[in-house]
Amino acid sequence: MNSDNSQIIIEDLAHIWHPCTQMKDHETLPLIPISRGEGVYLYDFDDKSYIDAISSWWVNIFGHVNPHISNRIKEQLESLEHVLLAGFTHKPAVDLAKKLVEITPKGLDKLFFADNGSSAVEVALKMSFHYHKNRGESRPLFLSLSNSYHGETIGALSVGDVELYKETYAPLLISCIQTPVPKEQTKESAEEAIVELEKILEERGEEISAFIIEPLVQGAGYMHMYHPIYITLAKRACEKHGVHLIADEIMVGFGRTGTMFACEQADITPDFMTLSKGLTGGYLPLAVVMTTDEVYSAFYCDYGEHKAFLHSHSYTGNPLACASALATLELFEASDVIGENRKKSSYILEKVEKFKSLPNVKEVRQTGMITAIELRGYEPEERIGLKVYQYGLDNGVLLRPLGHIIYFMPPYIISNEQIDKMIDTAYDAIVRL
Ligand SMILES: *Cc1c(COP(=O)(O)O)cnc(C)c1O
Image (cartoon, rainbow, N blue to C red; front, side, top):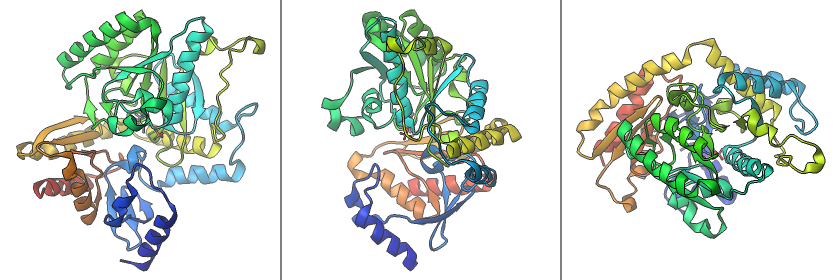
């Protein structure tokens, strides 16, 4: 190992507490210092390359150090790096707001900035609760899908349903109940789950502010996928009970599921849509909550009526992040990204066909540019995900399985040869388990 690599590892472990990590694991599992990125590749200090098969935690869509996005950020750097968004505004924020209103489902005409996904979820939850309050109703409960994930801050954690992240903090959480997510990707599963949703809304609808969902794919919930009809019917059911629908498109937005936004496949407009991750092309932290004029209006009155949404983050609408997001949207306009992705997903689906005959593969599933291989017959203590992860790293591919789920969620600019290498490496890893 290059001395730069080992020196960085030592200095890192002396001070940095890493996210989502049992730090003791690093006694045996080396950290990977990355020196640079280019396209789908990350490089360490020995110049060893890794195909980024997970888009660096699902954020990168047009590759690392994308020349267009980098240039746009550099240009912005010359004129304005940051200004508070209370009482002030700037062009990148306005241009981005206009663009997002234009491309998101019809009726989402207002936008509130945050600076990361969890904060956007907090904003949506607070706004929904506050909307009802401003209209004289008390709805202290939230509803979410079983197996869901919406982030790690207390409110976002409360509406998630991944035990591993949640159980320790149970006494701190806000009130949320779950309705079952459709078991499979079929229409029948979706319709079964709707019956359960309707039952809950019938019983407790008046207490519930909002129903929050990850449309089509539950990411951290093991890349579980379900049919769009569930969202169409859920929107209708929520409306009947005055319950908001929050579409958390933080992971699925910006083309990941085969359409620009997952909600398009259900042909609905949610009351709130949260966006982050791919929004800046994976460059800078930024998030937005899109909502309707109807919601906005419930807060609009004289100051003395105390109905304003007094929520803020220091880096709200940061100009560099907005410039990065605008550059990302320009790349979507410059070519038929969604159409090209459709070809790539088909190619990936053909390539993963061979996994189906492996005895330890339970299911292969895909929604757009997310493809998951579910393994069977392993205990959690075996940490097979970790074995696949290590095999991947040894062989130049960054795979980061979720337990027994190996998945591919690469940047959209991946070539067919790179897809071959990514998938063949995962296949070899599974064969060797
Ligand atoms: C990642 C994610 C979040 C949280 O976003 P952060 O920026 O990591 O706080 C929320 N919801 C979904 C669906 C996500 O995938």
